[in-house]
Image (cartoon, rainbow, N blue to C red; front, side, top):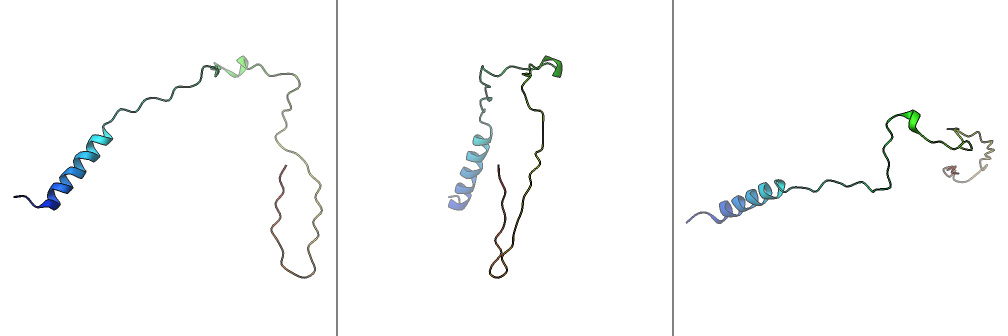
Length: 75
């Protein structure tokens, strides 16, 4: 009779190999997404803001005593 540890190991190997061979369905993109062939095909509204940065004026006053807390600035 074979050792039970060998049978369990063989079973685990079989399950792993069988599981890794399963076909995965491809991701289907939604119908609303349209493909753009080139940048010239883009339809950008005239009111679109092309800025990639924003200038902020920030004044920070640190406490004279006590614990200094981290400063987080978000829009």
